[in-house]
Image (cartoon, rainbow, N blue to C red; front, side):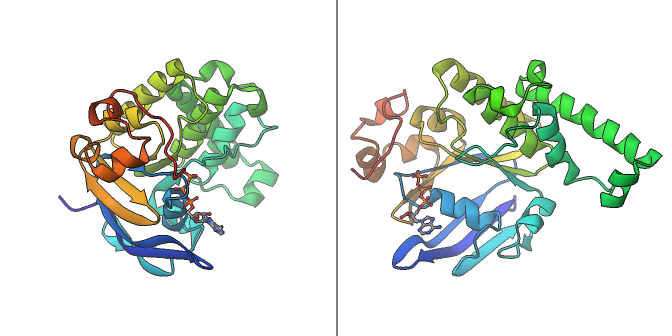
Amino acid sequence: MSALLEARAVAKHFGGVKALKDVSLSIAPGEIYGLIGPNGAGKTTFFNCLTGLYAPDGGGFTFAGAPLKASAPHQAAQRGIARTFQNIRLFAHMTARENVMVGRHARTRAGVIGAILRDPRTRAEEAAIARRAEELLHYVGIADRADDLAKHLSYGDQRRLEIARALATEPRLLCLDEPAAGMNATERAALRTLIAGIRSDGITVLLIEHDVKLVMGLCDRVAVLDYGQLVVEDVPAVVQRHPRVIEAYLGAAPDEAGQGGAEEGGHA
Ligand SMILES: Nc1ncnc2c1ncn2[C@@H]1O[C@H](COP(=O)(O)OP(=O)(O)OP(=O)(O)O)[C@@H](O)[C@H]1O
């Protein structure tokens, strides 16, 4: 089966820091693909290059068989790539429903003029957007918070809201940057069920996560970055026995890594 996403020798430098050194990997349609590595390994930089926030200094991406234009966030969204952010980026003073509606607007036709004049077509479209937002809030498990301001939601619920907003763009590939950060064990278990459900519904998932237990239990394949370099890309059973992975994740023994040993990686 041909890849949904292919990264070819993606390189990114910040001054003297080589954040990505010719990283090549490929993600199959329907996979949950994990991207792990210690702090500063280049994971978020990879997301930023993929979603057009940064232009790579070398290499590039092919998505669904066609090249992705570098440095074009709107193109990435239009082609079907959505993301969440490590540092939650919600509209704090808008309700949960409105935050999802913003994501949905990326997919709708009514323009600024329509929004100002509020003609019948625009009103019908707005009603459909609100309905879909409601469905997505239900899907991620926070329908009861629809009318609450985003800033009043718990940390875990804010992360769910970010996922709902990303899903509102109808992505083929959903990129999640540390979705479990700051969550307690119950919230993490619910997140795991949610991500598995998203994949069952046909969306490919690319997951950056420090929670090794979550990654190894959920992902079909895992890639490990270290100092900007791809160390290994394989199924979890192989990856968690790789010496560099054991070393990076605080010396956890292989079977501990798969059963909730270390949660934070670091170059300390
Ligand atoms: N905008 C930037 N300007 C300068 N250096 C940057 C920038 N973004 C990232 N870097 C550097 O690139 C390297 C990779 O950073 P990146 O944030 O991609 O790592 P990461 O694996 O996502 O780390 P973490 O797990 O801590 O989020 C780091 O040395 C970082 O300091």
